[in-house]
Image (tube, rainbow, N blue to C red):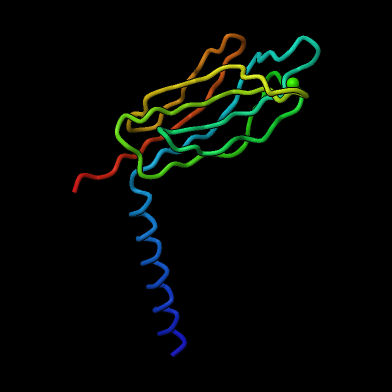
Length: 138
Ligand SMILES: [Ca+2]
């Protein structure tokens, strides 16, 4: 009886995993965000963070890294149900005592596969990687 319920348990787990994979069939993942030579105001190093969109969907923002001109942000952003030729947008911001200061914006139209992008801001360069797995035609 123990082995039967174990088998049933595994079957349920596998079924759940398959359903999960189907839902994730068309998605964009963004990770490996970093930057070099960012400049904030005159007085101090920038305190940079990034906000990420794919098409109309806001994916969230990175952590704010204090006093870093050459930040590497941990974490990743995931978008499901991607429309063909969606634009991936990254806004780079410097947290300030007053209103935060936008250092620049990176945009790219997503294409299937995995791509490492370089984006030149007015001051500094941003690097990131995205993968776009397109939904299978039925
Ligand atoms: Ca600042």
